Image (cartoon, rainbow, N blue to C red; front, side):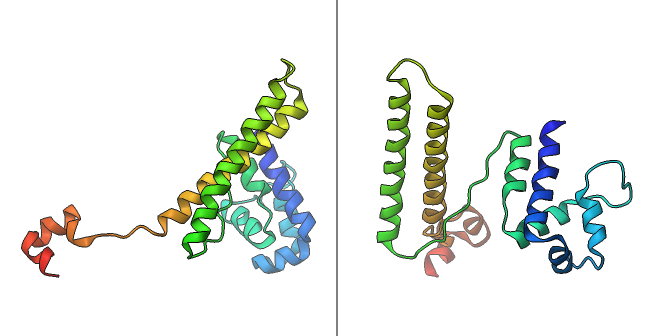
Length: 171
């Protein structure tokens, strides 16, 4: 299957770009040759296979998320990096504005692509790029807003069932 090959290939590229000997050391693999064998996805080495734990370590250590994106593509999903959250309300409002700006950029690139009645590959690539950034902004906004959620114990059904409404209001 081509898509799963892409996951292995992106993992191999990430490891090689980082440096296999140094990566093996950080992963706790004594012999870099073992990691080379794991990265050589094929039947030539049947006893050293890349594991999910290996994949997670490689992405974490290298910081290269291309293997993650390739894995998401296998299942027709996407992964987006969540932004580092700031505690200020101004930062939240900036995120809201950013979502609208990015949405406007996606709409603009679509309108531009449709202007002549044909959508070129380059125009679609620009639109897809703008959409990815728009979605990333929306997901980041949701993540940031979730940090503001407050759990009201005294109104939660489980708390009320265990303690009753009188005890809940006295706390």
